[in-house]
Image 1: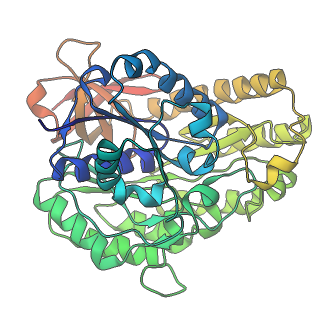
Image 2: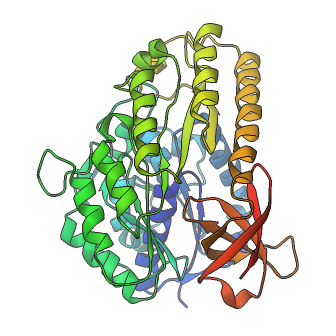
Amino acid sequence: MPKKIYIRTFGCQMNFRDSEFVKGLLLDEGFEEAGSFDTADIILFNTCSVRKHAEERVYANIWNLKGMKKKRPHLVIGVIGCMAQAKIDEIFDDVPIVDFTCGPDNEPEIPQLIKKILKDRANIAALDMIGRTRKELFPSHRESAFKAYVSISYGCDNFCSYCIVPYVRGRERWRRPKDIIQEVKGLIGRGYKEITLLGQNVNSYRGYGSKGDDFVKLLEEINNIEGDFWIRFITSHPKDASERLFKAMGSLGKVCEHLHLPLQSGSDRILKLMNRGYRSKDYISLAESYRKYVPDGSLTTDIIVGFPTESENDFCHTVRMLKGLEFDSSYIFKYSPRPYTKAASLKDDVPEKVKAERNNILLEIQNKLSREANEKSIGTVQEILIDGVNPKIASGLTGRTRTNRIVLIDGEGSLVGKFIRVKFKDATCSTLRGTAL
């Protein structure tokens, strides 16, 4: 009988794309998908190490399988992704019910690793390919029938002092433009309506071998592909963002008007400690340039509170930046030290209570800004992509605008995966409510 697999994913969009990729490889090798832990022969945890809390959740989920593993000793449990690479020497000791670990760049080997474990029942750690070019494989499986992630690069060269990514995903490598275009054309040919380009820093893309804005050239090529679809991308780094990128976003019809540009802090002193490569005035200039060329676009960001030595004055600079730039939404996190990083050598001296207070202050400000931004859409008519059924409301659907705002409407499930026009009539800090036209 074919063995059944179940994958639980933690972390960012890169991790979700990796899980989708691994599942596709396994399905192509004759494995089948399980609907739950209970019916699976192989359980994979695709993990994140960006914050300590993410690792703690993974450990808790694995330990919950201890009784199942005892009853079914032939159950295979694997830890893959960033945490597997970060904790090379620890996972088998910390959670001995794990059968194998696999880093992000070894993931193409997973079908063979599982077959070997099923045959030999020996623990395996596959972590030796970090930083190397991944094989160009195109399994057909996708979790969605109309929205797709496409990786354009792997790894990161920025070495922000708080970030573990370069140490678990390696230095930056770019996929060849022709391979990316081939993948996107295949997806559009299958009827996909939204393509999201992924990279730790998409706008540092240098796949064409030049020192200029290669990412803009890639956007132009994808925009020229025939078909009715949207293009999104995440994530951009301020030090590599450019006026040319913003001009392209304003002129390329398929590129959505949404820019996610992590700020991290409004304090120049903290930005320098973070090794971000820009100052607050540089970021403000970028935001002004973006809004000049994409006047109806949305701007979202990431912010870290409680970085080592962050004073009340440093935090006030962040508050002023948040209010002054009027972000459409923000992902706000409390700092936690990560192994290997330069910041791990700094004393984590901001008390947890202070981190929580600062986090809540920023969340309250952002909720007000988000509501005000959403309310500006009331009375307008916009095109949205219906991306799912709202389980909380009978006949309720969810969708997103080109600016990545969440929309709730009433409608039939047959609309999922289609573009429709909606008139907005109400707004909260997190959603728009509208009527299909």
